[in-house]
Amino acid sequence: MKRKIIHVDMDAFYAAVEQRDNPELQGKPVVIGGRAKSRGVVSTASYEARKFGIRSAMPLIEAYHRCPQAIFLPPNLVKYRWVSQQIMEIFSEFTPLVEAISLDEAFLDVTGTERLFGEAVVIAKRIKKRIKDELNLTCSIGIAPNKFLAKLASDLEKPDGLVVITEDDIQSKVWPLPVGKVWGVGYKTAQRLEEFNIKTIGDLAGTHVDLLARILGNWGLEAHKLANGIDNRPVLPEREAHSIGHEMTFDVDISDKEILTRILLELSQNVGFRLRRAGLKGRTIVLKLRFADFKTITRNHTRLEETNFDDVIFEESLNLFQSNYSGQESLRLIGVTVTGLVKENEVSKQFTLFSDNDDKFEELYKTLDQINIKYGKNTIIRASLLNDEK
Ligand code: TTP
Ligand code: MG
Image (cartoon, rainbow, N blue to C red):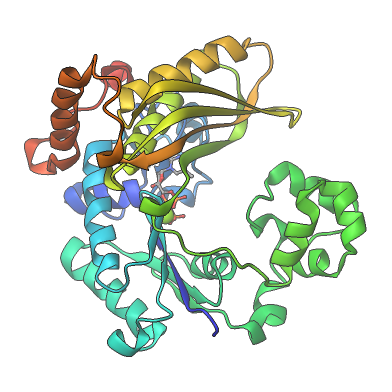
């Protein structure tokens, strides 16, 4: 049976939440990341700010030069997580098969639920309406027979888009797109493909797999399949996941250890939150670093006990970072993943040494995750994320 996959992605997520909650920001260029001239990178920018060329992962100082009149704000992660939870709850009313891939993005497999809720397009419209009515935010949705095509589709008419891609549309809607739109093809890979005159997804689809294997290594065959619209990956709810991770690719290579440490903290918090939401804990923390020359390393550390605490994930990934990053070369990408997952309630109580403490922390994290925006801005975020915001 043909699958019906929906991909939902919130529009300018962090910025849209801030604009929603402060009417003075509406219709204005808003940059989320930190103070205009502070160190650090842009998390996201409102669509008004994007007109000035401001993009995620751009250094804040460059964003400031592009648009000095923009309003610069630090991210309020507690608030975004709360909104994220509300969005995910709406999704899960339409299908149990929801895979959240970041705070603002999820895949839904609605293959079996169409009889209950109507066609995928009807479901998508209902989701958009509920997000607008209940959360006063907009999202963009893609519908397709698989994840790759659904994600492409949601990106085609941002913001507030709704795009369906069927197998018959691949040639007309997908092949003309630049090759950089293929999952996993970053800026550098796209440049390399261009040297072989592979510029569009159609070019990629028409290139012999042997040549692609020479250019892209193992990944060549996979990329060729995607370009031809073939992608059999299932939608995996996080509670069934084997690993949960988050990574960030930078627009400009970064070697500043302080900035990188802050990014590590943000990634660790994101992963911790998603683990807790999925009711999971993991033992192995994996750090991924991609250097300016594209060399990629992963380093991991396995703990005696499973965890889903932000602090522990951060501490472990920072240790790995400090022992594997000299500061000499700049980085293009950094990622944190936790693997070796078990369900929270199946964690072995073999190591009881810290369990009293752990129980206290568990309570603390539960409270943190539930804290509502009404308790004020930046209520509880690790101090080092905010140091120069004060
Ligand atoms: P995205 O969905 O990539 O971006 P967006 O929602 O801001 O804008 P749009 O989807 O309309 O293009 O990312 C979701 C949030 O994740 C974003 O609001 C901020 C955060 N983020 C970062 O902190 N750093 C990054 O480099 C990226 C890409 C996103
Ligand atoms: Mg988004």
